Image (cartoon, rainbow, N blue to C red):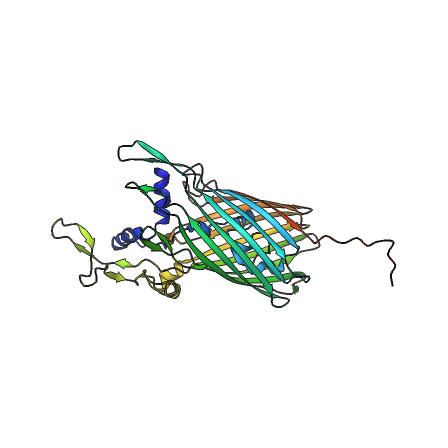
Length: 411
């Protein structure tokens, strides 16, 4: 049941409001934004995972749909397919894993139009269910998955846009409560993305290429567990990059991403003293039956309003709004476009979740095969993210070239 507690505490967003408000009233400023299906935000591949979760403006690859689907229009090959496995939260539980399968195909001769698809499967392992007396009542194997279909189009030599449609399913509510089983929760979302890649230019005595990307991801309807509807992790990612070619064999890439959830910030609720027990309890408006908000805005709003509200609803004002921006930085070295070494850093303020970690990784290309690995190093000991590693393998193919018939007569 320990694992079930971890899962439910992560995924049931609205239950955290009272705890957050109480900590705020006690002088703390910890106020993280919580959503349902947060597995959608986990880095699904080893390349970007080794770059501190930078991905808006990195080179296009098989896993671009998650980061910025419009990058696929700049893919060098005709088609590709890849697979990644990520053991998750190994410091807490032994059998949670994220699997990611993705692919793309250029559908026109010039390679300006690309379709892609991906499957993200989050297995939460086996959970033993028990009753109030500790007697085992059964096993439960929850899982979550998302299926994507993406399209990317070059609009000019240097600019592309993309759209992706996503179906999301979560079965964590299929647990027996009071003898009844819950239903799987399902919703849909879209990504809207754009990517810019400059022409090669001189930077000092070296050649360089600049990139920029903007991605609005997981924009969609709330997901319903039981009687409550919860926001999914709608997200905005803005990034830039600079690739410097030192010579024919050596190059360096430098990348940075700014990431913000487009979800309402939990407000600070008003509290009052219960005259009977003398305990601190939430104040309720007698006219509406709603909780009284001391600072901030009501988070129970429609999706479109929630997106707009997310830019100015933090109870701590502008300072807290800025703390809701996560920063990722990464650097990548390539030798002869065959061997890569990567490193990065991800920073989330302590008041918003405190995910702060370094990443390292390597990559190898051989013919059509790409193998990448990454490892996560938290800045604090006993972090749940310790021992997080990823392995990705992908295959990129060009269109088969037709051999010229030596007996053919040239007119």
